[in-house]
Length: 464
Image (cartoon, rainbow, N blue to C red; front, side, top):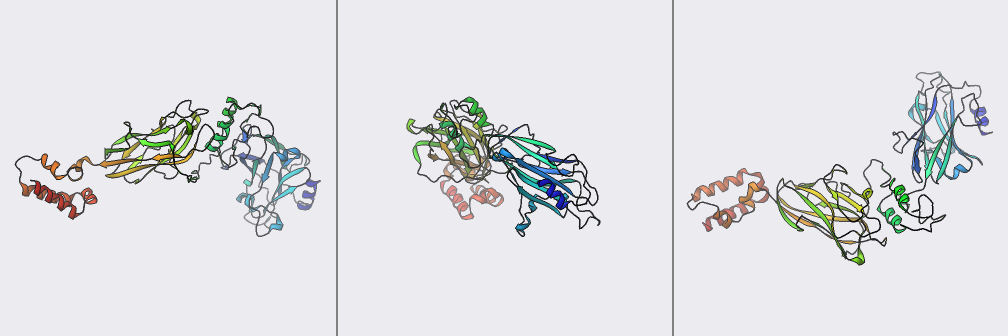
């Protein structure tokens, strides 16, 4: 048998290391412990780490992690970093952890009944030298991939245990559940929701298609129970890393659906003061022939030095998703923009009805400098109630930003300025004040050069 062959060839008469050995399971980040009573979605993975407290001087430890029988159809064990310099050695060097020592080894084993890996801490060369290269701690790492729904048993063998080698010392059971990644792009997002919602209320789902996977509980129909299961993995995978920026669709804009940015009065060109904050709205206007049911958009700032958007992530930010009717709260999201981190990302969806014309979402913009700013919309993904991609016309907003303390030089022409002056004025003193203002005020120098400012002074003199 496989186990006896390994131990005969490798162990020989070397003493067997005894100690507390364990197989630990983590989420894909490799650091967060995973409760094996929880479920794993098909397409996801978990990280397996072999640890040992053994430090018997000069010993060899051998372990095995295997999936047997029909369970091999539902889960795969994968080693890391097969040695490219010596493929014949079959050593997965990326699965060695530092504490396993200089002469660790990880090899794959497959036969007609059992698939998996053997793990060795093998150091006869330095067994009697200092320091010992194998120390207690985490020794090896491999990955488990869920590939089919069902309960999959993974056996952990401690071959150094005198209790026996024919059966695993203990078994970990992974509970694989159907994927929610319905379009197989390694993410659960609006593209999958479009597929799911296109089968909403279907009642003829069956094996093997199960209504394109939308019948998640495999009971023959797509209903609220499936919706609850779908949203459990919404925006999977959550790796903690910045999301990949999708390719913005290249399409002719469709005037039947319009996304626009406006203020509370519906204006797309406004003037505000520096340091003023204002609530702005993303609106939708559409025809019944080309409605929208879900949106996934970005708002970018033409000059991030002149303004900012509160893109604090849900639920702490000031942005709101306002689309109606029958909005799905799980799809509500706002946070840092995809295309521009200073911008904001907004998304929302309804289940089986078009979004009503009006406000899609709101956010707070703060003016932080003098000048003109444009806020631009980007559409990453929008779908209508027929499960078709929608390519809306995108309308921007222009914000004229002024500093109230600099109204004399910025927002008023010479005739307006003159109207604010007393009837009797020392014109020479006025000219002197204006000349000193240009010399002393750095903000004015950013806007006007010396020639422009002299022209302004001359216009004042001419009018007076």
